[in-house]
Length: 313
Ligand SMILES: NC(=O)c1ccc[n+]([C@@H]2O[C@H](COP(=O)([O-])OP(=O)(O)OC[C@H]3O[C@@H](n4cnc5c(N)ncnc54)[C@H](OP(=O)(O)O)[C@@H]3O)[C@@H](O)[C@H]2O)c1
Image (cartoon, rainbow, N blue to C red):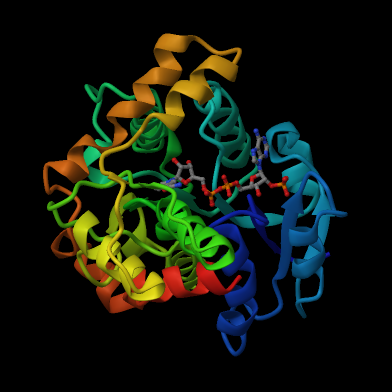
């Protein structure tokens, strides 16, 4: 067996492009003979099958939350990427995984955190506090033998633009306008990022021959340009050729449904409504992107390109 780079969350928003990008970046480096293992809970899913087609990647059907120290040692895991789920037990599950990684001698970890302005101990929303707590845990001296970098991305453009893309598709089918729901504010600029770009940044870090320069770093990631809700509606109007009649900015009403259908505490689930406040306050603009990220791999894809891809999908 060869040393392994393990991708947990490989089939998801960010993990897919980590898996697509990493084999090319490893060529000709000290890590060129490392195995790349992409994890999934279901090798039969369309996303897992697509990854299985990639050269130099092994798909392993294994839920990362159940991986222990022995598994990591047996697979000679040296580096890890993880895009953890956002559920209320994420600290317990990601924390367990990371302690197992430390104990198994893993040398470098790249993880997905959340929007930088939200990663604070006093944020009203539960899941950015989880990311804060994981970063605090990793910062303790006990973790000094495992290098880590935590990526703090702005909202993922594909998710934020899906309602606009669905509105356009529906209009093209029926000639009738529904309403467009938008999480972002009408006039405050924010630099939504394509989750694909986030994965490409992560792959560049995982392929770094020297991890010390990136150790204990929290990197801020935004898309290349700021956009307002009004500007997105202008893009939508270019597709449909007429003014949009019903727009709901700062619309987080879908979280009511999530909370209602969840078995978790309503109080905890409804706290998600606060996640967009910092972007409404102008704290998630392109200018906040870390300079190290601009040097390593500057995120490229604009909101307009992502919307086009969603509409054509
Ligand atoms: N969405 C946003 O706008 C946004 C913005 C900034 C940061 N983030 C952060 O991004 C992180 C998530 O990254 P992502 O969007 O790339 O991941 P993702 O797409 O939500 O999930 C990645 C993969 O993890 C597996 N998975 C999902 N739920 C799981 C569970 N409960 N237990 C075990 N495996 C599970 C699934 O793969 P299989 O089904 O193949 O196993 C999934 O494809 C979160 O921590 C979030 O805070 C999100």
